[in-house]
Length: 243
Figure (tube, one colour):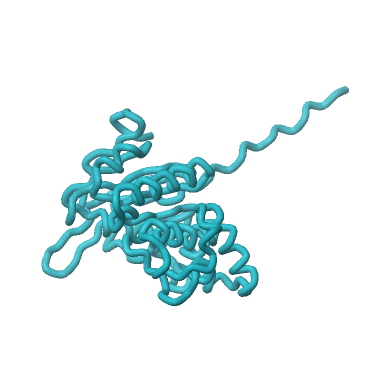
């Protein structure tokens, strides 16, 4: 008598990288920066959060990156409800899951590219020698292996932004949040940075670009358009709505 093999359980579903449900953000004086936003970002996506100044997209960055909490609603990052976490737990969640790239680089003057990138691991408990080794790997990934010893004043704007991207990537985050990453760059440097973000996405990184530039947004696979604190459209690869 033969027995059938035991059924194999399907793999557990992977939690979305970020999930917002009914998220609002209000400030004194009746200012409503977010109005009941629902958004899901899944592993491996590349999307733009796009809108004019004052539309709510910067607030979205703060909420998605756990730099701020919503006034109401639920925000989950990697399956964790951020409203239930302490400040220390939020810091650990950011360090493990989220990398940030800002318009104005935020590099330390007088410190070379390796140390600027290694600083991205300061709060991860990684020894200095390993931090620097991983920083060199990240700089090589953004094609700056010839600039290890250069300080910010010896780098072009595009190179500074690539150092900032390397710093965001050195902790191997699930999500890269890029806030107006080309805003302080000339056209050619901006194109290099966007090309690099596309390469990182192709390698498996989830990338979210916050921008006011419709040309940049239209070149990404998913566009989430904001106006007056609300999502007015969410389009994927030509479809009207994203799954």
